[in-house]
Length: 377
Ligand SMILES: Nc1ncnc2c1ncn2[C@@H]1O[C@H](COP(=O)(O)OP(=O)(O)OP(=O)(O)O)[C@@H](O)[C@H]1O
Ligand SMILES: [Mg+2]
Image 1 (spheres, rainbow, N blue to C red):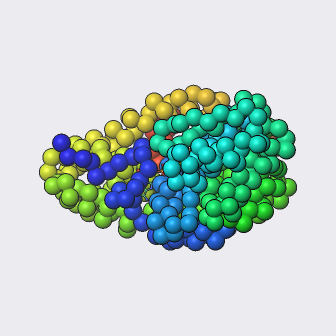
Image 2 (image 1 turned 90 degrees about the horizontal axis):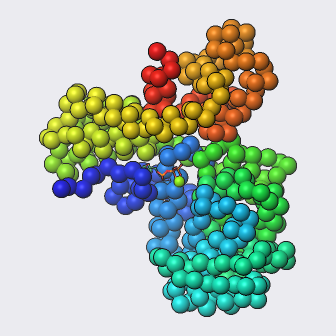
């Protein structure tokens, strides 16, 4: 059994992580300098991997930096946010679990009634509140990283993945205002927010009416270039005693449009089906397999759309640019203008489509291929 050189479903680390040289450098530089960052890209292009990689490098270069990670997908209420935030901050800023215990009591004992602290897996402690933190205590919890950082003479970087999910919670608007008013004074803490729903992230960070307006530097993560992927693919085959021609490696890039996850997935399918050398038949089978593997998930998503939303996807994929024109409305049964406006919003909010300079496109290459086969032949 040889380990696959291609991996997906986990963060790309070390040998499996390629490129992103300038993005890593600027993330490190900004966050270390106290500039907050909001990092946006469509799903699975590599945000989480990039942040982890850049922060690991920074920690190894600077002994006075600590990094806390939170995933907003796992947070379901404002109360839950406060307890996970406190847990993450206390855990990451203490070198050992016993110390974290002490710190939790020292920093939170006075402000949280009914505080209980428990050991978790992987040296993370969990702080539970029996009650909603009182109003005045909420501000103290939000100030926790600054307090700990200045006490200990360290710099703390708080990374919140899929930040836009918080906006779906009840009570978010109030929390948002509180976060902003506390965090804007933090001198020893920087915040890195990343998310895959561009539309929602932009509403949070780029709307002048909203608290987080101009709080952070927005960074749009692009794709890794074909010129970087091709040697990675060729090299991955080579080091495991197999071979792939440059042409087939390019083909993998083209099929997946250099989408990080799909590229690794398709490379894996090709690699695992190959004895010695990649052939046309192997390539075709692998491409079939990547569509089939993802189909149930696509189906599940598309079933939740209305008929006119599905029609709109057809129109966009077919390259229709004037969705509101009489011709397009009739050809695709898009409905009236109100429906069209609403559906555009829904499809964007659900991240089926991206708008680039006003032009709508379906950016997921495998979804697009599947959708065409299923609905457009
Ligand atoms: N720099 C990289 N080098 C090689 N492969 C990468 C890189 N970044 C991402 N990948 C591949 O893409 C996959 C998705 O990456 P990651 O989970 O970091 O993306 P994401 O944008 O955080 O995704 P999500 O939207 O699901 O949160 C990884 O499992 C890995 O296979
Ligand atoms: Mg991620």
